[in-house]
Image (cartoon, rainbow, N blue to C red; front, side, top):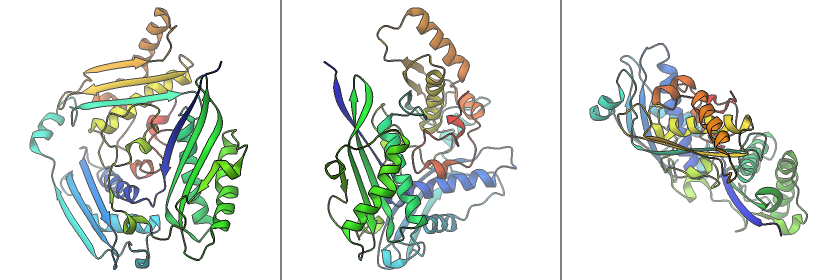
Length: 384
């Protein structure tokens, strides 16, 4: 008798309060990278952002550590306001907007103690911790099916908001439940979509438009369908959603770490990715592990791979590297080939990841929405 299981993942749009904060933190990092390109010195960035709506545009708090080469400056307020406006919060009537009636900035340089451990001949890890990277041959992007579809739904929801469904607002969520049989995805069990909207839109129109323009096209792109759409689709389960974004819910950076990674299919080390320069192994270690795992699956050395890597603050090399292929019948020769190929794919020291994947690129604002993994626009997603 086949073993059946249900697996769920969620994603959120660019207008979700936590994602607004993630994008602002990442935009500051990206601008620091851009402004420092002509200097032979890497900047240090560890940004945190919090947002809350209000009657006149709301409150935004920027705090963290930023160290830049001499002569390089950042206009933190402009970066934040431009990001908020780009997302779609440009009208104070929404209770949060780029106009902001309160902007609090508390930013200092990186601690000299941390810098002493990082800035060496071989770059030391900016913190201790463990990171995971995974890949599985369920989708073209070698990502788990539930998170791939969930991101497809939120990305498409944003696209249709910008391209035609003008009654939609920036905040939104998606959740997908996939039926697995004997370890492989075979059907969609449930799709949940939530979209903020203009108060005048009718729920019947919202359901029709999002089903036809978002849900069905995304499922079709993955070769999936719904047998009973009326029963399997939930849209705005709580009813109308007209109070949204940071007015409805405060936002803070790195509260969506499972959305940013694998949707719960693989473990997460616990450290968020957004607003951190690549010397922070929370992000570079996870990206390096994903690169190796994806390479092993792409080369068909395994159907599924999970890599765990850990670091000690100030030390350049990983403390340990563990590879799991979830294959109980794997032979010693297959294991030897996998371990040897993993070493060849990428040096997982801090410099090995940063230099091997050219990670000091201004791509982190894009990564802040729709997941860090599964899109080949990122250097750590290139198949060797």
